[in-house]
Structure formats: structure tokens, C-alpha cells
Length: 116
Image (tube, rainbow, N blue to C red; front, top):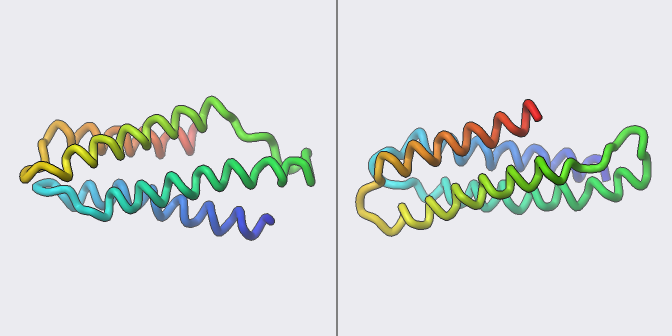
């Protein structure tokens, strides 16, 4: 179970890096990899929360319960990034304000994961 959690965590980090890296690489038109990386982060994040409960049940001293407030904030930020990405994908030119909002939301999501 712990190996599965580690694999999910690595994939989650790859998704986060893909969102930020894809945004930094695409300033004129949205890179489709940003949305794919967002999906990866979403699915692996949900799986990480789901696997944490059985880990806690098996060894409560080593595995704390997930912080649902933190998970909710991160989920809302990621969903906002995906919604902005969907709207920007349909446009010929990637609006600068949308790009900046997505970058700031992505960085804040990473900061919340590390600091909170």
C-alpha cells in the first residue's frame, strides 16, 4: 500500500510540474499538456486522499488522517485552473491575464502543498 502511495505521489508531482511548466512554455497559445497535467494531478490527488484512509487504519501513529480543509482548497484551485484552461483553449490567442492567473494559482497550489 505504501508503494502505491509513493507512486501516486510521484505522478502527482509530475502533474504539478506539467501544469506549471506547460504554462511557462506557452504564452501565445495554451499548451494542451497543461490540461492533461491538470487531469493527472486531479486523479492522483483524489487517489492519494483515498489511499490515506486505509494507511491510517493500518498504522495510525505513522499515517495521520488527511487534512480535508487543505485538500478542499487545493481541489478548488486546481478546478479553477482547469476551467480557465478550458476557456483559454477555445480562444485563438491566450489572454495574458488568464495566463498570469493560471501561473499564480499553480504556484499557490504548490506552496500550499509544501507549507500547509
